[in-house]
Image (cartoon, rainbow, N blue to C red):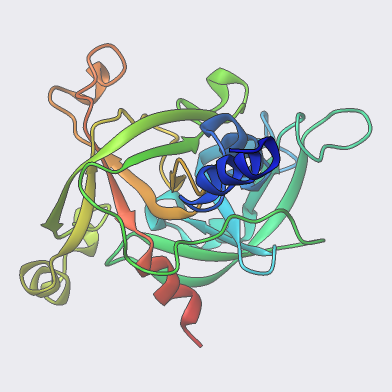
Length: 256
């Protein structure tokens, strides 16, 4: 076969499988600017920023998704909600972290999700998986701020596999919210949740779970299985974590 047709054939074969896929390092680099530390900001406190969990930016660049249990229980504290953009991303000229105010838009305690509005200019966003295509055995990764400020609010990425898709009903964060209606919902409204063979830590709550090839968000990190006491979570982790499927995020964004 002449050289030129042979080269053309090789090129066609290389492209036959579809578009070239990015590797995990490229996906991580693209996702990091959209993953934020969520907490309470008080100029008179020390430290001024009290970290509570992870969130990620979606939609128009001014919408933030996190877990409902990341938010404070007292309504008065909602006025202090803020996100912190780390010094390694979009920081001020002095390299100091930038803080933005947050306003609660929607709350879904049944699926432990919250939608908040970010003040200021739009930020980089993550793209949600448009349909429920996650499968058991799928390779994924999740990003957030495990152990909070102890690691300097640097985003950390963990690889995992969706080891099971199983029905679950999430209890509310505390017993005071266990009224008769809440108990009835727990009994009648189980929904599918992703079980992962990766270890999430305190601080990962609300972070994105994304496909390692496309970078699209397939879920939101929600909780970790504790096999001992909470005090042994760091020294003796179970290696089992859970994530809320992205379809519930899409439903939250679609609310009027």
